[in-house]
Length: 447
Image (cartoon, rainbow, N blue to C red; front, side):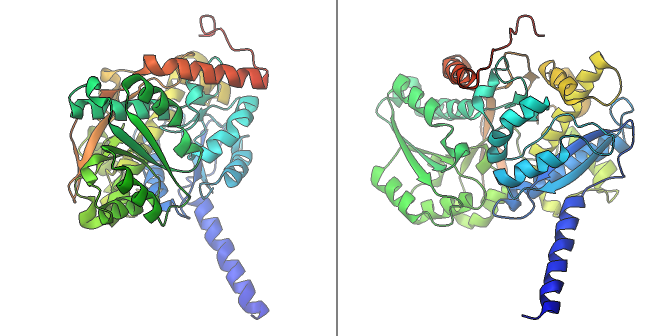
């Protein structure tokens, strides 16, 4: 290959990387602005999931700036850094962003991936930067006395496992009917996928069902062996905890091996339009958990359509993704960041906040129905009440079913059995504190 050709390709790659880095970036940061870093993954095996998430976040931040004039007058500035959903690049992006942007301080940080969230746990604590992991991350970080800067908001993996079992109990006619049932979990073989093993073992012991665990190696492009194992085991239900390309592969392979798709319940990272559209007829009847339902008829969507989409200012490249589960999860990510900063401003003043001040705002975040109506998220987001001792604050999800064209909600909110799960969380947090030499905060005093 000639030098000129190699250089041309190298220059093209650099240009593409620059475009990815700067995409969605507003004006240069200035004094008085709040920096919201975006650790994104627009390329790689999980890009189809990530792209609508960033669109939701960016559209909401742009709405706050342009329609509401910022948070009490404090404008938001953001910038992207491509992680490809890897821990290594996630750490690089965090190091690039942790000191803010041209004088604008960094507040809450969104790792946007379980590998990076785990890798950054100690770093973020040392730097006093709160990590928001909406629907993923360290479940034991629910205990804010040990993890003051980790917030596994709304639905931890432990709560997700409990919601799934509670839904199965509803369908089977009661918890007593779970005894002797076979329940299989087909899971992405990563920290994310393995996170539900502990709670499912506990719940299996409590209710007497057989707990079958079947791993799928990343990225999950071939799953014949796993679904042959499912066919041989003949479970009554399958909990599908895949991610990215492994989800449609799982659904299509399940159909090929004759397992009924309406007995498969996907977790929240296997629950979006992008997960089921590639499955065609095979996906009809597939069920999934969601703490943020799909749909574009919530009040916030009407506001965004008028002020952002119709004005040609949306980050969304595919209009069909407007209102998808992943787009809506991005909206909720954005809303949590904004409302946490707003809560922090009540104590520290209407100005940009440091990471530690944003942490205080998160621990005092209270979103009741009235506030959710004010910001346009009523019906899209469950009520949220956070504190020093509770960094999850929700613990519920709804079940939706794919009809080949759209998701339809088939339950109201199904609440996790958080009381049963909490001893597991406390024990895991205590073990972490012992390992790291951490003296837990007294949450009765630190409020």
